[in-house]
Structures are given as C-alpha cells and as structure tokens.
Length: 263
Image 1: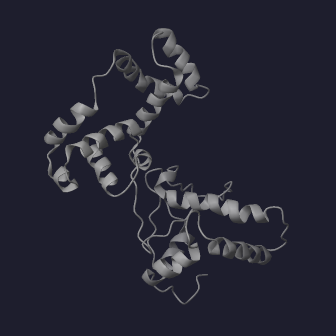
Image 2: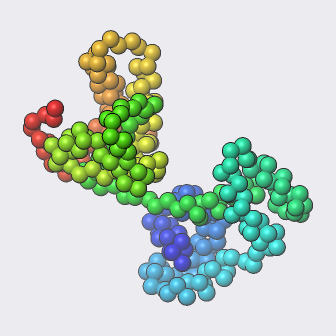
Image 3: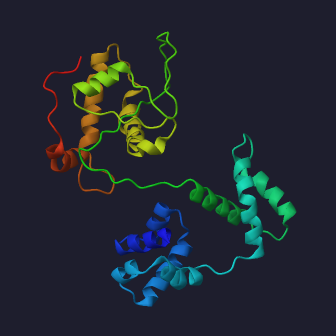
C-alpha cells in the first residue's frame, strides 16, 4: 500500500503523472488507474489517508490490477534469470528476446519485453529521493582519471568503510566539519555533486581545455573567471542564478569559517 499512498500524496502536492512515474518507478498507466479510482471515489485526501491498508486494497488494488494473462505470468517467471544474464559481458536484450520468443512464439513484442525488464529492475533497485537542507552538508567529488601514491603500508578503504586521507581529515577538523564518506562506486549516494560535476565540465572545463597554462596560479585565475560566469548565469528554467540562491537562501545558515586558512 506504500506505493499507492505515495502516488496519491504526490498527486495531492501537485505532481503530474510523468513526474510521479519517474520518482516511484511505476508505469504511468497504473498511476492513471489509481487516480481515476481516487477521483471517482469522491474521497478527500484526508479521508484517503485515514483508510487502513485493507480498505485501500479492497477499493484500489482489486480494481486497478486485473488478472494477469498467461504470457505475462510466463515472462515474469523468466525475468530474474534474464536480468542476471544481462550482467554478463556481451549479452544484450535483443539476444535474450530471441531466446524468449523461440520458447514462447505467442509472447510479447520486443518493446513490451524490454519494458517488463525496466520495471523489474526498477522494483529491485529502489531509489529514495533525498531532500537537501541549505547549509547542512557539502558534497565533494573527484573527477577524471585517478593517479596513485603508495605510502608503503598497503592501507585501502573497503566498500563498506572508507579510510579517510589524513590530510583531508585534518582539513575537515580545521573547519569544524564531519566527513561522511559515500560508498565506493555508489554515485547515487552523492547524486547532487555528480550532476554538478557534469555542469562544471560543460561550463568551465570545455572553455579552458584548449588553452595552455604554464603555472598553477594562472590556471586557477582562469578557472575563477569561468566559475564566476557559471555562478552568475540564471539556472535552467529558473529566474535566478546560483549566486543569488546562495545569497538569499544559504549564506545566513552557514557558520563562519575558521579565520586562519588551512595549510
């Protein structure tokens, strides 16, 4: 019942079916069925929220989910194995579809076949939307190819527990910050900065990568100019820039930096 409650809550907040489908990984047709039943019931959102799971199941799910066809049952039984096969190098959906249709000649077309795979993967790889409070956290990422230093003791962070670089830990302590390291190779843990990295490549890196710099100070000076342009340009589909957002929303909730610069 959680998905149903989320659909109606998001709709009540003014979200459209496309936005809800993207957030919850539910097909738009299913969302439309839920909304059709909800709007036809005459229930207020408050009355809907007060209903028990059993009441919601009787009112919504029985009507919204007709009995599955035999070919749907057959394909859904294959999906765990199909998705495991897709992880193998060189295996494509087209190859697996040919195997499926040879076994079930009356089965679904390839577009519907791929749609079932997407839905299955979405249900088994859930993503939670995170609301970010201004001034609460700063997301940091490192870009480009990695170079390595060997300190001789073989220390290496695992995918479950990060080992902080000593200099970075000292830097954080100097500015009274706590480092909460994201899991290795889990970009969704820091999706906000992943998007920012792409923007920086687009608006700063591409403007400077053809130029030649002979010292770090001149490179940093050029980056600052491009960064100012980036920060003062209105954001996509917004009437304000990142600089304006910082000044109006974020600046007042930040604590003062240590007046002594970290070295």
